[in-house]
Amino acid sequence: MIDPKSHILDLDLMSLSQVEAILDDADEMTKILNSDFKKTEELKGKTIITLFFEPSTRTRSSFEQAGKILGADVINIVNSSSSSKKGESLYNTALTIQSIKSDVIVLRHPHSGAPYFLSKLLQESTIINAGDGMHAHPTQALLDMYVMKKHLGTLKNKRIVFIGDISHSRVVRSNILGLSKFGAKIVLCGPQTLIPPDFLSNKHLPENHPFKNIFYEPKLNDAIDQADVIMPLRLQRERQDSGLLPSLREYSTYFGISLKKLQNAKPNTIVMHPGPVNEGVEIDHNVVHGQNSVIQEQVFSGVAIRMAILKSVTQNKALKVE
Ligand code: CP
Image (cartoon, rainbow, N blue to C red; front, side):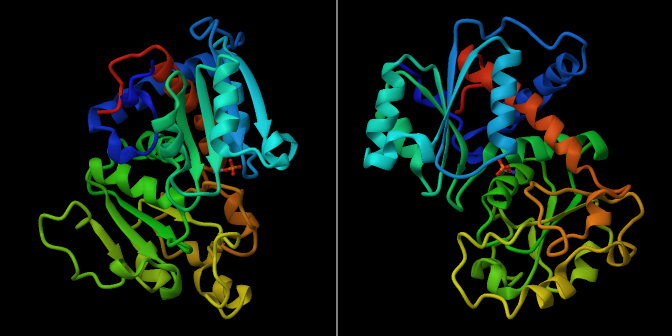
């Protein structure tokens, strides 16, 4: 039976030292990724099943790559070709996958909470949350923090600016949980209709509140001034109600990151994006591929981080979630 603490559901369930252990191990995994022979036997005999009910390029392929490099067998199931299309419930689908002897189920699902639901019901498979609705995306946040630390050295007091559709972003939610553990200063910027109402006033939280390090800044130039990291976000239109924005053009004019607007930031600011990018909306092509961008480094590091995560959950190390 799986220790319930072994699941990776979100970063609030992990201690700072557990997060640091994964980031540290990702350094070792990066060495394997950069070597000529990218294969180990650390997960030999383990079976990982990716179960994706939403589209994905980065997360699904990097989990597959991570598992295969470590010697695991990896089976990919996507909603469009699974028996869920014939009416099978999530629970029965997951139970079936467990019965064919999966060790790890990597789940992406449009419903917030779906991985928590399975983690309570399955007795023999470890669940990794690969994105649940607009709730959480912990492995993305881990890889984001890994890249930030590589460039900034420390995250303490660093100014990390998230721009755009904060309300519907599971990436921001998990990043907030993780970055707060490291003492980063988090700035949320975007139209008021896309910011959770609790954050619209910067006077809402008591001094000792764990999210006292989060600030709302409505003007893009003020937000990116002195930023160490700028992370524009895709408009999550699949999760938005209508009427939140007058037009994409207006959004892009005020909040899209162009080379011209980037001149208001420090020259060494790093530009990140969890992907997929909608070029010309939240960020311009020449910023995505420009000298401040570390977007492809995020993708590369996603494999190393997921290798470290798969190791931690299958080898039952002291990385268990508290
Ligand atoms: N960042 C992210 O989750 O990308 P995918 O949807 O391509 O997996």
